[in-house]
Image 1 (cartoon, rainbow, N blue to C red):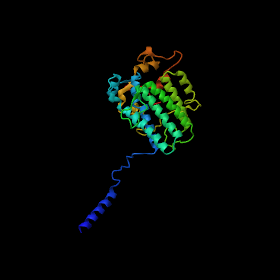
Image 2: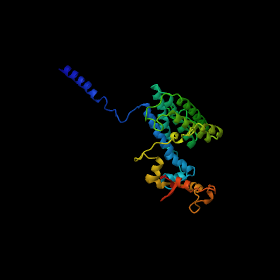
Image 3: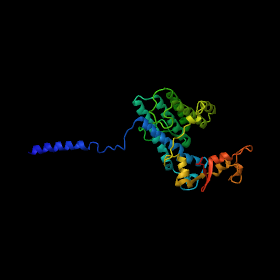
Image 4: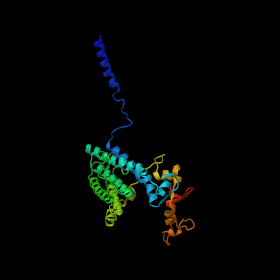
Length: 315
């Protein structure tokens, strides 16, 4: 009898184990995804980097904005600490660079190369170039690799050179004619290689301008966005909707968010383009030509709100 109960108990234990095999697997927290969806995630993160807090903060440091409250005031006063940049670095290297590395690895494991890899390379170059322009020396070769807990920083000019080489590789891959991501998963151009090729050349021109290689910038621009007369079609515009939280990030900040009182257009920036001497905060700064009327340009770019002069969100 004792042996019988022992056998029965073992059988029950093994039988019950089958009931809880998947208990700790959360379908809403996947550990892997198809390459095309990882690419989409990286593209969304790129929108946040290019149009979000990093852009506003760069505007403060460039003299385009003036912070009035909370952290934006401290940025205008240059009272910063390293931790103030943590979220932007996470977006750059975790949400974009790491996801683009995974996109390439997953795509190549499925025999997909060519266009998809080229798109990922353009986005990586865009991100690295942006990071170098914002922060100077940054990780490049070891960035996004789980193998390196503390990736090595590289000189800013070295990074710019590697960005140019990466864009050259991307242009070659985009010309492959195969490996286009599935429809609707690439949110900028639906994977159109011609559009991405123009973007790659425009980025080459932009980053050559950063390094003062003007002849190379001019040459690259000849093949960039709009070089075939289709500027709007191939402009790298972030897709947005009208639903809450889906609008342009700048629009959300200056039109919808309670934080818009924190930031205004600087007197310096407004004075350079304001042709109205009674409104211009520093009339001597005005850079318009006496033969022209800059009112339309000023009104297109700026608006006067209850907080001061801010970017125009109405046009």
